[in-house]
Amino acid sequence: MDAKVQQTIDILAEEFPEPKSELNFNSPFELLVAVILSAQCTDKRVNIVTPKLFAVADDAFSMSQLDLSVIEDIIHPCGFYHNKALFISNMSKDLVERFNGEVPSDIDSLRTLAGVGRKTANVVYAVGFGGQAIAVDTHVFRVANRLGLVHANNVYDTEKQLMNVLPHDKWSDCHHYLLLHGRYVCKARNPQCGKCPLTHLCEYYAKGEEN
Ligand code: SF4
Image (tube, rainbow, N blue to C red; front, side, top):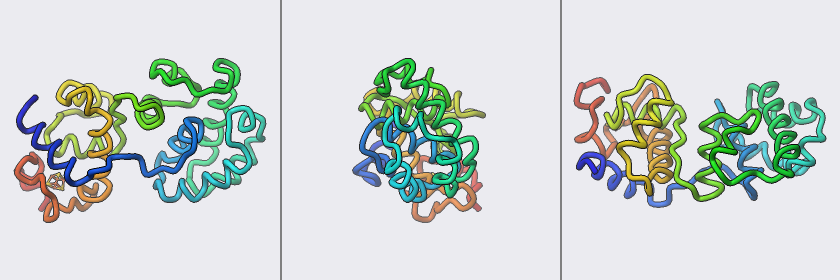
């Protein structure tokens, strides 16, 4: 492994000794729903909404029976509630029809679920089933490119390049490292370079783009 990559992983591992999702869930199904809701929404807000939703339906069978309007009313605070309610409903029906209501544990099947994109499938595979996957969200995309771990214009290329440079057994940990670093330090509009332990490894900082 490249020395810069190794140093980056070591430093981020110290910064975030317990790399894990900040979403609350009690089952792979609840995780799947929470990840769908987390698009363009904070984990904190999702964690406020999901107990209300899961009190009404906490598995694919019960969720697939709910009227869309019921789901929409509950998830309204998460934003994009029309689309998200539709995704949750379609995904639940698909689980019932093709997987007897169980969330599949293999990544290829997860990626075929209605309403479930590649990023969501990767998160559920990694967080829900302990698999190795790099889910590239806006934080992972930004931090990986600023650091110069990758040089990519889109999330798919970022994922592919990260899979090439990061050791396979660290993919899921590194997803959390980059996400948490982006959420709390390397923020989109105002990166906190003064507090960042990665300045000596960062291409963005070296170019003086933080100023
Ligand atoms: S030095 Fe600045 S731009 Fe680079 S990773 Fe740290 S916070 Fe982000």
